[in-house]
Amino acid sequence: MKKISVLALLICMFCFDNQYVHAQGEAAVPFLLIAPGARNGGLGEAGVALINDATAAYWNPAGLAFQYDDPEVDKMREITFMHAKWLPQFNFSDLFYDYMAGRYYVEDLGMFGASITFLNLGENIWTNEVGDEIGTFDSFEYAVTLSYATKLQDNLGIGINAKVIQSNLSDFTSTVGTEQGEGKATSFAVDLGVLWMPDYAVFDKRLSLGANLSNFGPKVTYIDKDQADPLPTNLRLGLAYKVFNDGFNSINLVYDVNRLLVVRNYDGSSDGPFEAVFYSAWVKRSLEERLRRFTHSFGLEYNYGRAIALRAGYFYEDPKYGARKFATFGAGINYNIFDIDFSYISAAEDHPLSDTMRFSLGVSF
Image 1 (spheres, helix red, strand yellow):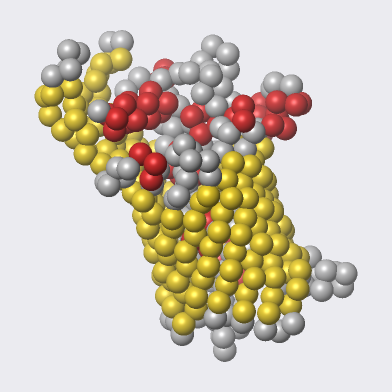
Image 2 (tube, rainbow, N blue to C red):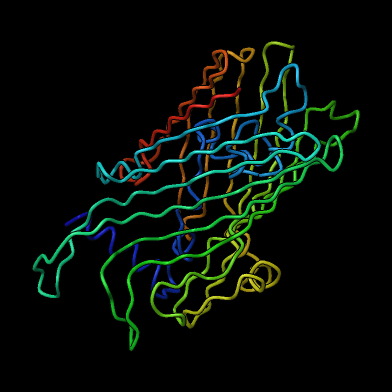
């Protein structure tokens, strides 16, 4: 019954208007905001300016443009996988998150990539209005993404993603007003990214600046078009700075700031994607409220050559707009063509993300 209640809450968040639901609850398909890659997971979920693997498709597609600079060292192809038991505090064995991404360099064209994001919500019991069981159904969501990135200059890259999103919450027919339909929805979105490495002597090629606008697309409709919910359009800005590098030991500092560009009105409606991204998200509500909607991610990474990496970070979200606050820790090992990474979330005992562990494997060839 606990699992049924959790799923019911998710469906309510996705399908019905609620002006008091903030942060992730303001938009449909929030699984698109789950951060892949155990490396960045150990850095407080930061990394828009620090990406050197195929997960750049999520963090900042422009980062793909810099992953085949030196043919003597860099590999033209890479595949990465990640698995995580999601919301471990609920102790559901069939609630998990998987991510797979790959990239391939094409001479004179640039870097191409593809990724699949999958969130399994497991098998659930369907009951009637008096609580009798009338069947079971599987719930899951996924997105398939194609990426392209290229350099405009040696220190400036751009990238774009195109994705198809599928949400399957229920196979059963439901009624909303005079309309009937299943708890399924399909949508599409684009991501735009830029990565710049300022070529000034004062920075000594240590600084990177990144920006990524993700999940920009039409609203999601399950049953009633009048109750369609926006995609979780997100703006991520950040920097990465190599604090120390003696040729073998290095320390990277990363910082990201995120803003969910979704606007819920007091009558329960939501603004369209163009209006929200380019206007209303920046002018509606008070200045204090708009500033409190930003989340912040900090991370520190120590590398011993390419063999071993140790990581720590912190994620902060205002208590009024989600209240996610947690520390992260991680480690990585490189062996030949393999990169193995692990990360762990440390949060309050009753926090649903507490004890979340991410495992990822990258293969370059």
